[in-house]
Image (cartoon, rainbow, N blue to C red; front, side, top):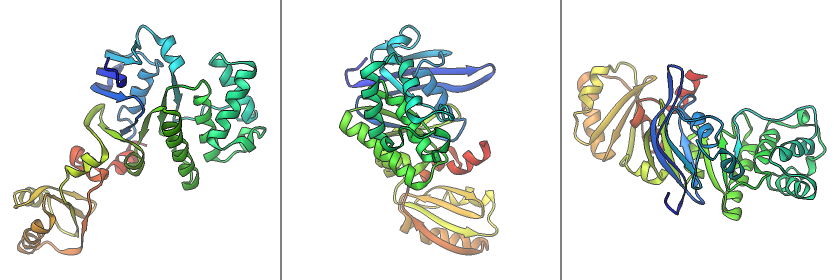
Length: 320
């Protein structure tokens, strides 16, 4: 295992019966980084996290965490790793501090050590003034922050966050972002962050793995992934374009790839302004009506579209 890596995954496969959730993926997570898994629901993100945290055994391949193999050293890994699941793992009828006391005892904490860690984690997630409040009376965002606190009690060096902002308001989401950055910058904690929100991966993560159908389609920094898209996209609202028109568009100079999505024609171009004249001439020649036109800067959304042929947010809606 390389000295600067905290997780090494090699050819990981995870199957549930006849369903392959993770299909031979390989990646590393470096010490002290925020590493993102970006993909729709059902892409294999949670299955990968469950394997790293020793909650599920791999079907094939190897996973090494801090030098320990998940098949052989589950106890050591659990002491080292904190996990915050997508589903809230809380007891709603008892207080915040009682929830933390219970989960702290699960990690083997007790007495003054446990009390100190509860105080510290409540301060980190901004819930010190809610310590004696019944959990079911908390807002959704506060419950998410408490969920995070439960995973931090044993002071892990690696924290696994599975869709931690699902269903929360903007203010609570921003507070969770602040918590994550603080854990990373002030405490040196390594973070594996799964999400289907483009802006989260782009703003939080030093590196991002784009995962779809159990396979990693790309892995790099958000900046590098976006830079590979060229100048950007020409987005045109049309009323009568066909799939055959897309094939012809793809043969035009400076055009890399075209997509037709919900009445909008998206043309990815290395040089958008040079491609624009050819695209407009083509639409006019084919009699395709143009209703609006925009030139857009590339984003991770466009990277995902290029790699998978679909829009991430639409994939999540369909799978929900």
